[in-house]
Image 1 (cartoon, one colour):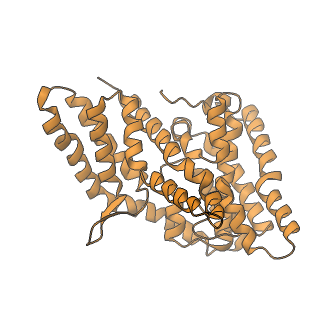
Image 2 (image 1 turned 120 degrees about the vertical axis):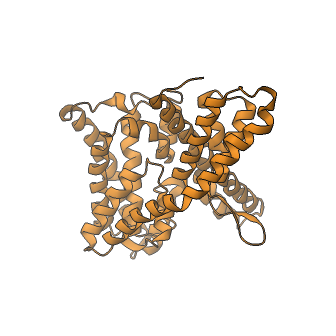
Image 3 (image 1 turned 120 degrees about the horizontal axis):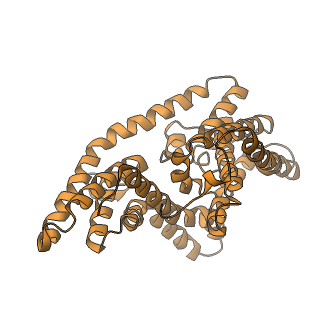
Length: 348
């Protein structure tokens, strides 16, 4: 089985995008609803816990979806998934036992998977019946060990981005909102975890609201780009808020960043003028599960009706048509910007 570098990288991105959707969308859709319903019956508490556990399985699920891209067999898939879990940092030893500490670092996860997939591709079935003995060590444990060594350095990279965004919070409120919203808009469809960044730097208040609306801007950008070229399932997933599934598209056509920056700018203005606020935990969710709007509502003063109208203006009425207009205008004035660059293929 042979792959050129472009196809190899494309397989990693496509598989990772699918894994993220499978692992994160269920909790994004139903998590907040189950939290609310839990006050009426304990079964919703249990269901909510299962959603979180399923979400924490991202590293293993990503290993499976990426293996599918490479057409690996069952043994190779199991090895790749194991390496992914080891390199993600999602499972750590706390002195008493092992525990999940989150979904893991997606960038390091991809790095580890790339090493494992490369070794599996090179080795294939060359060892014959000894594959089941030595392949887990060579293509599973070894890449996982390398991933565990690279994890602190990858976290430093994410931390540097967080420090830059934290610096934005020291600027005047209007400029802060614009820069944070634009940053989150262009970073949402990348392997970088915006939830992790927001929580590490304790992004709250207007900064959190701007980040939240920046993610909304990213989702709207990909929704309008996808309407004419992608199937209903892809568009529906984007409407839910899973913009990370478009990582392969974004990396293949970086010109999309122009639309993201424009829509991010509008999002920042909405955050400032409608005084949208939030918490570190709500900053990285956008409108998914209504986490952003619900948290923003808690910080707003005045009548409930007035606040809801303000949130509708900030989250829908203003940014949605502007995102549509931005897409239509850029298709006419920007070379190589068209509907086709948003085409998502599960297998490219």
